Image (cartoon, rainbow, N blue to C red; front, side):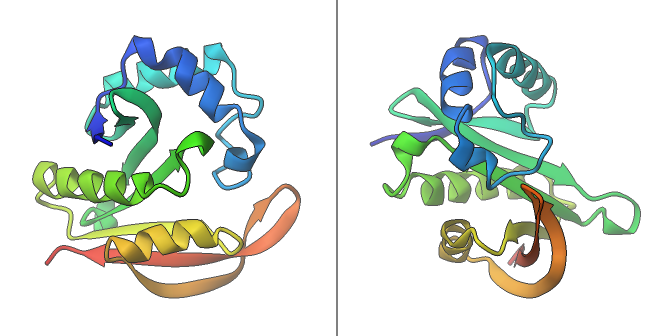
Length: 166
């Protein structure tokens, strides 16, 4: 199994729309991620990703689109930090794909953004799989922010993880 991070391409739109149109994925990402997820959403995301290839990318498995990774750089006094985000299509779950993809993405971030010293991710309290992935690639839990997030009309804790450049 060959896992790679690459720029989003127009040919990803069908797989992106199909994989992203999954309630289980929607339940674990920000509300800005639409559900249902349509071809129009996929086209818009690909266009956005192609305009910022260092901030948004595709995960591929054996050259097939499998999910996305992203980066939100901090600003002003937080410009040395950046938030990472990611999602993976359900057919690829439980196979170590996200761990490898996230490791590749982190390496790419360190090379592309020398000014970034700290990566962080906020995780819904119920998303233990995401917490495990972060821990596998070296992130440490920094805090639990009580009742800091809302998803599907339920207020939940946010688990904050970080990784510092070594």
